[in-house]
Amino acid sequence: MATSERSPLRTVVALVSALGLGGGGLAFGFVLASLAAAVLTLGLGIDISPAAVIVLSLVFVQGVGCAGVAFAYLELRPTVAPKIRSLLGFDGVPGPFDIGVDLPDLRGAAVVVGGYVLALGAAFTGSILVTLLQVDTGTNQAAEIGMQNPEVLLILIPASILVIGPGEELLFRGVVQGRLREVLGPIAGILLASAVFAGLHWFALTGGSAAGNFVALGILVGPALVFGAAYELTDNIVVPALIHGIYNATLFTLLYVVVAFGDQLPDTQNATSAVLALL
View 1 (cartoon, rainbow, N blue to C red):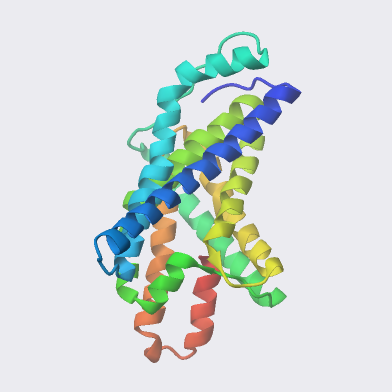
View 2 (cartoon, rainbow, N blue to C red):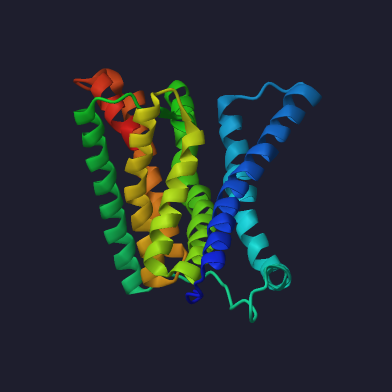
């Protein structure tokens, strides 16, 4: 990870670039997914199923958008960063920037387990808060599709570990948090990257009131802080990717159980609401 290099202008540039990279990666992936869907439906006359919509989103948003932008940043930074620094009048040359990738050792595995427990604990605490406040929160679009088509959740469960966790962590912890850290330090990097990560999920919500959706995003900050701290502790992106992936897979599994076996549960409506508050 890079070291802190702080000044007012560098701080502004870091904040703008971090937000641009995070939002740009998601937006780029969304545009590609929309274009692919348009080609299939309008160009080829193919009727896209809900499962196909999720697959397109996974491939283009988490895969090409998140992971692709992260790798592009690593590749282009050595060439582009010196030119930007020269244009802005910064002294020196940009420091090294990399994303640690390795199989977790015993300490890393312990962080995965502990982080998973903390992330779930933060999410469940947040869902209790939603219940107490009685606010109308929006529904995650993927979860909404899954409620109508439970087979989609069976795709999202493994995809959480294989695609969603790695893709989003490469971008938001590896690049966004790393970029903020080199200027503002580790604590500010974790806090701001978590806020960016949670805030951009606003666009994944459907329905709900403005106040309720702000509460929902606030809940997401808790797990995001865990992901960020795990990366800072280990300097290994695999660790937060595993925590994030297993965390998401757990929530989608719970939602599948509620949807598929709701007729056997004593209070299906409250069970569904509780799980949706976590997503």
